[in-house]
Image (cartoon, rainbow, N blue to C red; front, side):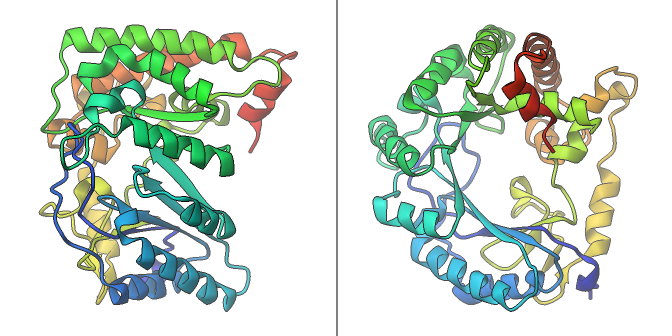
Length: 366
């Protein structure tokens, strides 16, 4: 049995369901009518809250708001439990596709200080993120975005770029800006349903170069626009942190609990053979997590690269998603990381000036 007292878990993710009301073109998940029983979620909270010094609980899917009533119960349960522990910081996070958001749930989220992030692909939403009936979700999710921003102006957009819509990236960023969004995260889609070629990546490169110019324009004076890929590279460089240790949560301080109570190191590995690192009976296994960590090694091709400390080349889920191996970096990931680093540095060279105090303070703030 694992010694759970040594697992200082800070991030607990509960997979509330495998079902989703979307059928995105790039999504690798198998949507099944499987939901986490309440007793499983409660047991996970009890187990891990007892071994951590603070905790963020994230609700994950599928689409987590399909289990809305359970989420509401669990938030209240965790808050009551945390009150009995001296000085125990507790926070919550939900990433949703937005379809089931309403004013009532937004009020609940605001009252309980739940961070809501919205999955929205901008102009790629129209064709790339359809519902289970094959209908576009663009119009209704745009309405949900406006509703969300009215209550949470700092809402983060989680944008995924399908290669077929790579030419829409900069216009999508403009769209978000016009809506009042101030923070956008972006990742290229990967997995067995997606294929990038040189032509599509060249489109992405040109679009991100446009985004870099917009980022410079929108971060002058007191203006703020956070493009997360650039922000992370700049801030990590300033702090002397390598990209992987700052952003990859693979291992002991993050545990995902699947609907059946099995533990996994991160979302990409849920249900995959060889990646279960414990269960609710035994707790998260330090030994199993350590064994997985040993298999996550730096690729020989990266060892001499001057950008290795700034690149997510040892991110287990990104590598496995692109190549099927935790330690093999795809050509796409390599070129994307080099591109983001170059553009982030270009932006930093323009924006980090004594007179541009707002941006400088944001980058240097701990």
